[in-house]
Length: 471
Image (cartoon, rainbow, N blue to C red; front, side, top):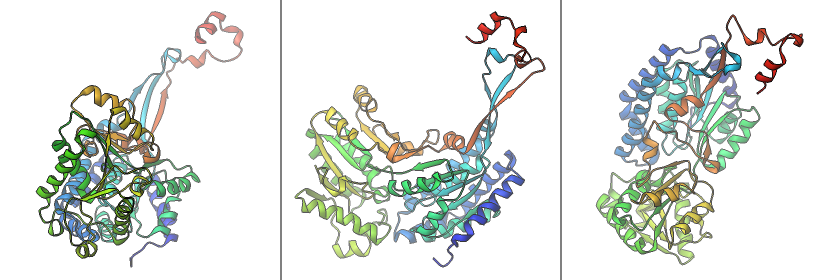
């Protein structure tokens, strides 16, 4: 990348952002104006955004880009804009009768400068949604987008420079060395979206400054299809969740646990979904390519390992191998009943390869999930409320969509985030606003105050009142 940010420019940029924030903290009018300009610039720059993302992927479905990136960001910005006045108002607190007649409240105060480290798989929405939230919360922002989507990262810098002055929002472009230095800066809050392995490094770097974190990581998000749920309907919804962006989605269903009697019907229904959605997959404008050669080779290695172990591997579409390599295509692929020793069960797949594992009892499926790290997403499929409650009551996950996939991410009123190895903290809507502000308690004292009585010499205070206050 020719226009990389020098590592030694990071700290001066942070100091510039913080100095401007200290000199003039954004008020409600400024925040609304910033959000309005950001939404307008996104609408005007939509075509250039689509081209940049398409170039980074080699081919990215235009409809997927418009749905996930453009619509996702604009809807989030508009929600922030609508809710800002309500969220900024001080909330009444409880002082307690002992401090009567004092008055208590909680104010939401901006933190200062928020760092945002965004990934390549959804390079716009996962950069601009937390950025817009930080702006709504009254902060300045330093953004480090992924070097694996260089054209989109350059587009982001150009877009943001047209909306914000450089002492309110700055963009740093560069590779792993820059990212390492960026995560070690003394931000007032840091948002990182990416793999669990890199998240550990980011957390270690941030710990040196006691920087509070929002970590949106990943992991193996399971779907559990109960015996009562129609396999064809489950297949249609799993297909959308798994093949959207060719499975390069942090909350894509990573594997499916299905009642044994429904397994074969589910696989056939998945095959029918491929035929209906991508009649000629290699030439389809609706099927996204893998981001780069390294990730394509990684996914092929997972499939090759499954074959080497004698597992049944079912490619649901035929693609000429030479074309698949040249265009970085991985066809939708099912692997039946892999064991824990298979490579594709040892880490997040992050591609259109779907292990389908049969279970005999629902308790077996729940135990299978609970033996692993807590997932970013969980997808129970059942029309029986008791079955769904049995799953929800025993599995802790970052978020859940019942009888479908992915959609809890689009519900901006719900907090989005992981738990344990899949992340910490949350953003989206009010959750993000709260994460990027300080809940500052304020106690307003009156002319007559309890503390006027609570001072030496204590002999003037009746013993009965002391006992009452100590209850």
